[in-house]
Length: 277
Image (cartoon, rainbow, N blue to C red):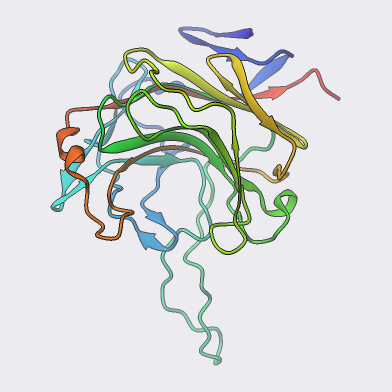
């Protein structure tokens, strides 16, 4: 384990090698840095009922933490999801006409990305939620995933950490080919149960040309050389209420009981490796 000290904050646990800091979000102060982050409010061209940009669902506590919570808004339970970029297929489509052909371009309005990066070590230190009813995640996504069959051209989704139940961390995922007929999925590493929800944990992925290697609290936890992206990606920190993806699109009862719960992120950092040609 390679300890990288950050003045005034908890250190990072990096794989062996020499690194320099490329991106750092320590969540200092009380205001979210909107030059780095935006709220994800839509998914697959739908304004998703689980997400909000309310300061009650996501706030900085003044102690260098981002705190995520479930709130009730417009009669629905909602929480927040942050991202440094945008998937081109997320934004809802608005009616347009191309010339006189009356053809509809099936993509919504595009946005300028906040932060994209290719390769390096991506790490999040967080404390998991304590109650059922919602889940949390730290992941990467290509803005153009699924636009080709080759992940070197169109990229991947890389799930570094997902916790669907208190104290449980799922295996890591690598998706490519988009989210339809051409989806390919790899499950890597170890499903962990009994993970402390009172302590902070570090989750990371080393993304190198042709390889992903995952880490949990500084220890290697799975790798792959299959379907590895070669295009810049953006970062996401997710929370989502359980139940809205089910057929009835309703929050499960446990979500109401979790409104006093929280998911807390200490930092998100990206490092470039500098000891490789």
